[in-house]
Length: 182
Image (tube, rainbow, N blue to C red; front, side, top):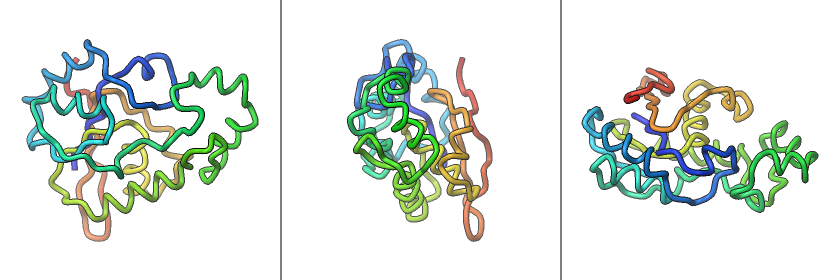
């Protein structure tokens, strides 16, 4: 299963909590060049504008998979991390230190990990997925037996690929954060 991190957005560049926003034009132009490098057709896409635009830029039609959405950031949606650190330091500390915490009123990282794990175990292995970083980290966590706090250490750049290969009883990580285009 090949994961492609969706094209960058204004929120990606300004270190904001995820929200449904369009991809920036420069990132979509890069995605257009990525299309020929994919070995399989895109089959699944996170149900957000930037992921759908990335699929379109790749020249692919893909089905929405609600399980591939980023964790709902609740009232922090779209806010810069620095602002949340300033206005809700205890809430942010809880969110960063406890995968079950959801001080923003949205979804916990543990819930995201469980949702992605369930989807991954039921999905066809021969697929290309376009989604954002949290889902890719959750998939890596499932493959490696890591929790959400540990997977936050993975860098996954926009338009990079991460590949998981099915093996008996689970998944093997073929590569992470591979830059396909420059």
